[in-house]
Length: 562
Image (tube, rainbow, N blue to C red):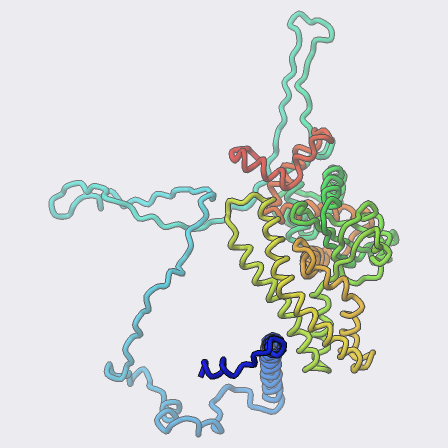
């Protein structure tokens, strides 16, 4: 057959060239059709996944509502006792019904033959109790047997110790308040020479002429700004330990600590402004406005540096006007990742800051539109899910990088991996999504939820897609939103700031605590050391207290005392 096909080919080179050209066209067309089918299959699969999630959510919601309705109807119309409902008896066999109505009494125990065999214990899969961390202090409590039990009951020989059994119990010892007595020796000339009396120098204190030590100040700051305990609760805790420290006194102490670390916060801010990309977000806080009963709404803004400058700095402003971001970012000319708040618009310009938008915000609009446009909104969410699938695949490859890489090498290689996945996968998905959005925006009502969601995405399209051009960008602004959670939890407990100064104090102490957490530090140890060393430190040496450098110093000298 092959020879016959070859024999039937025309001898004319021009005709052969046309045949080859037609075959190439068919091959290209077939390849394009295959690529289109693959894209369509991936999108349909993502849509099915999102519809299944929505179906499970609606099913769970309906079951919960039905349960609540049944309980309400039973409370209103049903009997109050929990007796067996006779309407359900047909569901059981006659033997089961008799057993329910006539359960065995203590006088008529079941025979051994009627009792089921005990279940066979399955072998352990290794999920037992984990050992306690090695750094915890151990205290040995010796348990010995009485002297008479140490004599053998058969030959009257003294028994010898052949081993011991050790079991560990985790105990809690409440924190102690310690009074440190600073004793300064005084020396004088024995012959009474004038001017020869010398006293040991006064040690530096976090608060000049104040009574709190750095550990106490760190404890109060951590309790309020990390664990969200208002000062009035801490006042009660100290009272239970037999000492009276008023909340107004602690408030003054925190304000003094805020002033003490001002230079350190400025150093952190300078490092953040060196970042290639900055995340930012804001959240409202209630502030007392001078008069006793008057309140106003202030704002805390979070600014997060890139992987090479991983600090979080909070900035307080008395309002949400754009003055705050403009002042903080006045010397910044790189990329800003934020939501679509209009207050940032004045910062963006061809020669200034470049906007990087957030896909999590965009997805939120389509999720909200699912109530009225389920199919269209779910299809949009499926497109966005595929974008995050590419990010997840890149994350898995980044996690597999060698552990011996330096921080700079890891940052660079991670960015290269993310960029590769975005260019090979995300760009194509975004092209298809843009065509879908354009058609949906044209057909949808402008004021409808799906119309607003599509309009939001199209209006911010350039800022939403720029992340595919640089692996150092994030796909969303979730890092900044996570930085807002401590503030959101805190304000539920302490309710408001006592003044604008209280807002500034909170912003600086939040900055230290959250930056320490981002570098894997114990915030208490870090704050205690900062409060201890800052009073006697020159401004040129403050860089050593930046969280990453502080961590590096501790790792190089692990026996350094805190």
